[in-house]
Image 1 (cartoon, rainbow, N blue to C red):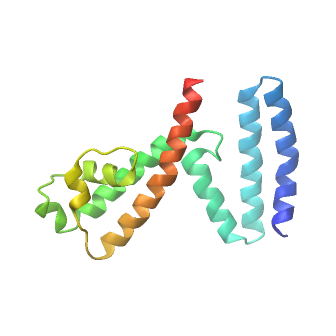
Image 2 (tube, rainbow, N blue to C red):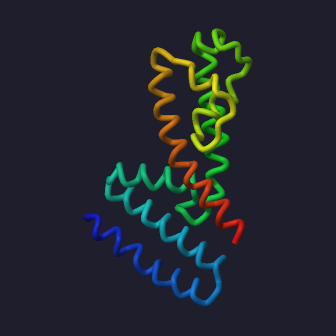
Length: 155
């Protein structure tokens, strides 16, 4: 099965989602969209399309397939803790005279928020550097989801 097949398998769900949204039933529309993407994930696993399945798993657990962008707050908390654990294992933590590294991790994760200028002067070495590159990249993505979640709450 190619990518066209996965798009076609989600297409009926999208039609129902659009009908429900146009009828003002956002809760059921979200449930149908979520269920449809779960089906797409199962199909990707069954077809051994591992890259697509990995994308859908990350998409599911960080934003609820875009249906529940507020879930990104949980992902941000998890990545902040993970970044702090990685940072705590470096010598730079002691040099910077930081106790836990949570503020540093949060600062590196979300580029929209700047807690301390001194965090940006810390040069991490070793394997931790590469994790923190990924950490920062994920922060850009999750930050945009967080902005979307906040915008949807303001409506």
